[in-house]
Image 1 (tube, rainbow over the protein chains, first blue to last red):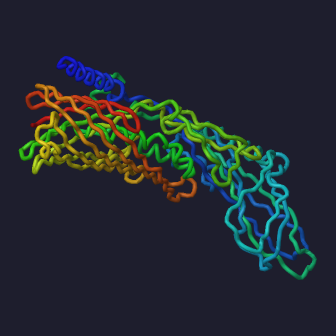
Image 2: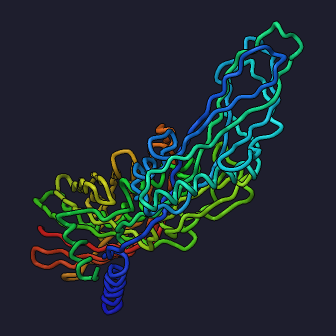
Image 3: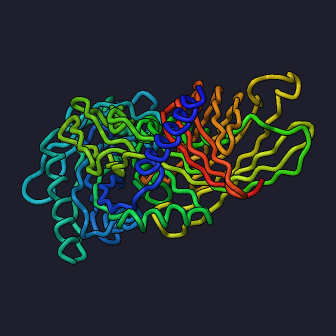
Length: 211
Length: 297
């Protein structure tokens, strides 16, 4: 009996110290971890004039150094060297009514296009919203062509960053459409809405972890 | 780095450090782009692992004298191994993003590569990579002082500011007591004591904030210099995480489900003059091993 007990003790000690070699004495390992972060920029469209006129508003989002969507700053804030950035893509586009029209029942039907190089590409089509009350940001249904256009602009910025340049690219957002009602030329529309672009960014970070 | 250097690092820890989870600034950065639900999934393996380590190696004996002057100071090393299933989680769509289908993304201990999830209209959401960790270990100094009316006090404490390293600031404080049951039942074949221990462990103040409670009954019997012991108890573990959204800058707070687990300990303590050495195996939220070295009587 005594021998069994000693054997049990020996087993426990051996097992735990054996485990200690694996579990309790970590080695410091180098890791290259891909970090994901994001950043946003928004454009504001002011709509005013007679309600019978069609909407045609243009606004520009600048991407790059010193702009609202400053990828270099976003990366640096996340601890990622610009030379280690892997990719940046459009994550989402949202819209909000930031100033309501005086007519609470007014609605807008329009589309949003984007243009970086070449022709305009549809980003949001079949857009319909009540503009008589302010809203928070809402999800927009996106078109692949427009998202691809912005992604190409982002890639251009990243390529320039990696090359040690200080890039600035401009993506033009354009809203066209009509409001309802739209039969009284003496009645003016006056509202403001915002389109927010959010970009998902991934880059590599070297670090040491115990394992 | 060689294992010997790593050992030195770990034991120098007993000056003493706590070698813990991937923490600090880098963890904050990785969480920053995650919604609250996905941060919960990303950090998912931590509660069980922390519960399994923090609640280990607290009591090594059921022998608590009614009255004596005992004082020991030492270090406890506790570790658990992660399962493969802990390495990924299934993210949910954050507000404003509609995915085309589910993906398995790395948890904090998972693969280092980020995972891209495609979404409506050609959008893409990147989920951060993990730190590729297979085991999790904690080293912490522990002090015991006793005993009065069959009661001994136990304290753990460590606070380290690791500055610009990848670990940030780590702090652990624990206190508790063990009370002799044997004193009320003379003639028992083993020494029995009931113990309770509370711990607070933080990474970067509020980035990860945990609270652990361990309650057990420890039975032991001296066989010369050797003393086997068995502990049967219960662990409770609560964890919260708070981080800044990398886009809006707003604080995001995530509450994790409370972990409640039975805890079985099987160990042995070696009494040498002035020095005590112990090893134990733990069956708890996550199974693990622990060793300890103490000086005193």
